[in-house]
Image (cartoon, rainbow, N blue to C red; front, side, top):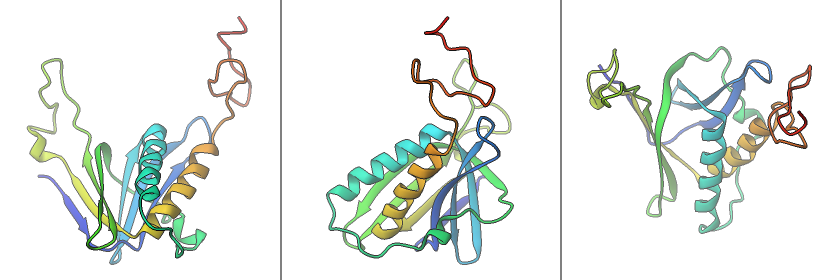
Length: 172
């Protein structure tokens, strides 16, 4: 049975990372009307979502009202509802809102058939949320910080460097 979450107005739309650098799990989180939905994603998905939202904001009027930084923090002890698959973003000019739709990732076999527990794409969870341009701008700024807070990149190969170093392919 699929889950569908729809929020016409979110209190918070944010990203975060759980765990220590090198072992972090990235998440997106929506909070509205006393409900919190947390979705596991990849670091690159957070960065790409931030970049795309920023491009949409570039064509809209400047944003003056933004949530306070504390509102961008993850809710304590988040439970992951599903893994992020497809993400769609649009700007609703009539309501002056960004609309973000997220669909659950569906693993498939070699024949592109869904793997258990999914029997079809209709079994996937979906989330649709409307956020203000201020919330969107705050998401971008916060997400940039979340992505940058990981392990530093190697100067030679660009791969992440662990606390104990790493085997750089360009230095070997």
